[in-house]
Length: 174
Image 1 (cartoon, rainbow, N blue to C red):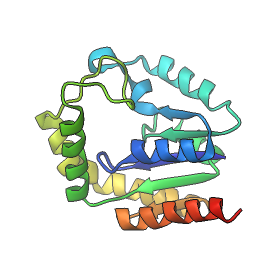
Image 2 (image 1 turned 180 degrees about the horizontal axis):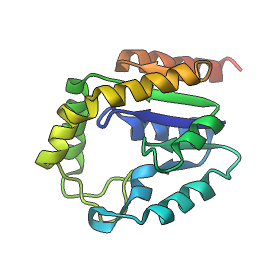
Image 3 (image 1 turned 135 degrees about the horizontal axis):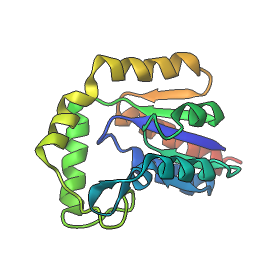
Image 4 (image 1 turned 90 degrees about the vertical axis):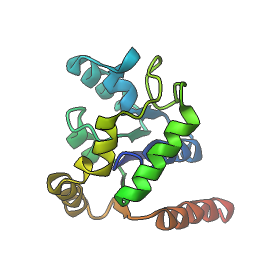
């Protein structure tokens, strides 16, 4: 099983990716860990692409993150399932603030060592406004149109929770 988890910042992509990796017992890659080195320094793009290409050689995987330059096209082609979390800006803002509160002064699992959790004005603007650009929304829509059989778009947590409950029920009935 290969699963690509995409969506808006603050929607819970990393949390979902971890749940799926544990459920299927498969390797997980957080693209934020690939994109950033310690202290939020951007990693060399070729170095990051090499790490992603190597990880994608696994028979099964969950990859969390958007980053088009980190083989997004290839990830989507190879994925058996594509999950897009397309929540509204207020849900994502709440998720980002909650994450910031929970990890303030700490490093979370889904980011590189030495990247202390932070919420600065640029990130606030990104979550509230910039990430909802027409171009970005159309990109997610294009993924769904190109891969309709394997793409699931969740517009709220209730839909996602129903899906996760269905997975749990499948496991208990097998």
